[in-house]
Length: 501
Image (cartoon, rainbow, N blue to C red; front, side, top):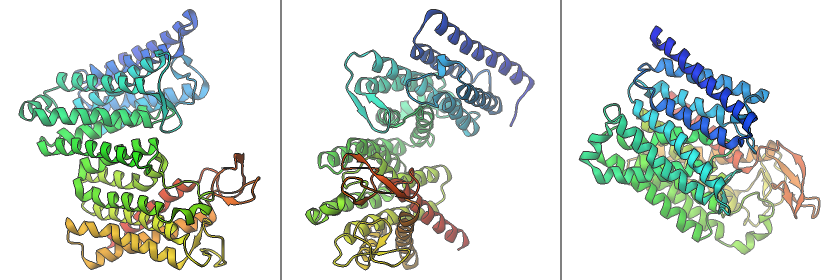
């Protein structure tokens, strides 16, 4: 990490200027009674503008990383102690002031020296887009509100986010055209592909802003903007930009159709769009088809013999109409592996993604088919009979259904690569193993409740419109977390086996 004496002098001046801005904003808040949101957004945009003009003055990544790390520490301390309320105070609990410099730190390390335009564009999208979303969303008298996670957003604010993001992208990429992505040359060669890619990136980062809560968008939006820009433009190949744009279009189509068919809740539709954009945008149909087959067949399976399953629905925390948490639990690992594969090129990651899909399929099919078994399932721990739908209960019918599901979703892969029989069997076995791990976690650490009204055991903390009594497990370890953890464990075990072999 290179830091010259000149860098240190400039860093000192820059740090003093930013600290002065923070102090002045706090003074203005107290003296003139300015709303916290106004002063907070002012500092937010001003900091982004500092990064916009920084590359000519700080050619080395080390200097940028140092000041970013400094303000991560300063903002964390100020937030913890209640200092500088002009920039830290919000109506909701938010760690955005810590995430913002953390995003810069994470982006500067790999990209500042080679592609400062990518870093500047990613930070500016957050600085301008998010500020526009906040100002417009709060100035509209009757905003159309929606919620993907815990924070409410508005349609008007998201529209402003999209327009601000596109403006920020164009400004940064055109000003720093001679470095990194060489945006101008790419646009001159492939104008249609660039327009399509920019539209896709704008929708993509707007979706991430809508999905993030408690200030997490200050981290997710810059990181995902950087990932999208890298996917579309760093290779200089037209096909990469078009594939990402196609991924966004496919994601929108799937999300809209599934929402209309009541397979996805609104939050699940947004999460599906984001996930499809990443997976297809990076890997095309080879990466997308297995999880697409899982989603379609599992959604149809949840509707199969629905009347017979109705008595058990009150026991399960989630239904077949998936929300954002379920989509993330089922597909986030595949999306993460696709991103890592894009940056590393390690082909083994594709096999691990197939294991992840096999796990969620085996678990979903095992549950959907197992509750229809004629005999009661047995506890995975004690072997005793338990009521159908009980977390940690397994049956031969459900287990065979899970294996069948893992097998079926792996078959489409043969259209793209010649899996050996050993690889195919290993994927199915790890899928079944992940489902078994899910059952063990469900029987031990997953939160389980008993309704205080009807007396039924359930995964839901609220039942019959009343708080349920927690019988066991950790309150935060709910169904979606268990699904995610079991997938991570199975994929990790498969990765160890790949490494050894």
